[in-house]
Length: 486
Ligand code: GLN
Image (tube, rainbow, N blue to C red; front, side, top):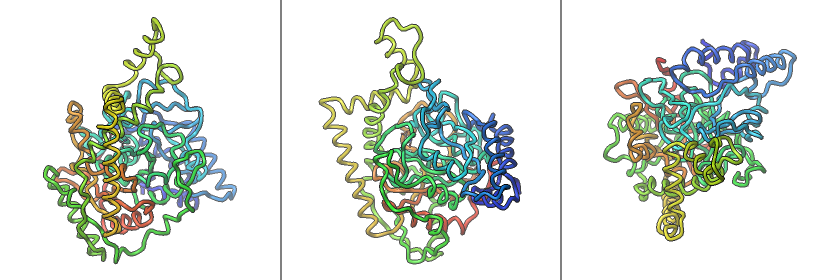
């Protein structure tokens, strides 16, 4: 087997047994990046020298009989909105060019404590606003299955890197679908945890009541391994929840007999690609054949989810992004005539069109006179959407839906039409508004060989059951083993 084909769990085991070395694995990933990334564009920075020297250190530790940690010597890629001390972090925005992170995100500290090696920083939509990874200041990322198409977004770089076997796993962030939608479009697994499951300390904020960091990998087992490492309370993030540590990996492999899988009627609407619909139907049948019961459920406020999200997310973004004023972070417009000119030109030159659109919309919905009509109303609808899930989970244990209404679309197809772009997340957005966890796993292909993703949604802190169902489904199929031609 080629080293780049290994999953995280397989690689860690081979390194531990000294059947391969961390050095050879990291080298293989770096060679793969060199061979394909000029086309795919997943990375904005590759840490070749440091990754190789860390690999060397990992191999030495193991040779000296040191206790091998869970991810000893395994390379992982991270999205360009996660801070690592001494390294640039830019959210793929010109406004953060030149900014060096002064501290390290908790998730990255935890990966490193488990022995993982950072291999590079990945491309994203500017400030994680988008569904196609076309709004980055570095240029676009391409879908490894068809390079004329987008990888989805905003974590398109993290996902494409895993799909193209440039890294066995990565971290992304998900505010409205940014892990699950690209995972679906690139044929890999990606999970957004329950709000509060994973610390956001060191994640550059987009919309703070929605953002979560999550793992992307080529198997559900790897997702469980990574989530177990990055999850859990962190005193440095007051929104991270204090709960006893969970053994997610041990919940895999159990039977799904007697589990009820809810199918919301509102998610099977007109306009959905018939091939996606068919793949989800077949996936449900598979799970039924393994003993699960399929039940009809209703999430009646679904039609308001996208509008609600674009009020709340933009409001929070306008507040979070106010700090980029040319004084403390990254880019500053040259030769200002006075302070106001400096502020104005820094923001005009530093932010891209989509980010500006959202800052304006968010400022508007928060402004006095409009606050009640938009922001407050959206918060009320958010409560109804959350209640929809609570009601549905009285009837089922997990909810199954498509992760995206279509497979990967063409590069450029939706850039000029923000509304069409916003609709790409129609099936993922409610999950963030409700704060529940969800995973996307590969469940088929269209007739032109583009991956399709099945989204499974769990109860608050129901990651264990969610992963168990996802794993049971994955073990009955081999969609996750197919590889793109790039
Ligand atoms: N595509 C959605 C947006 O543009 C979600 C982004 C995300 O999850 N970061 O806001």
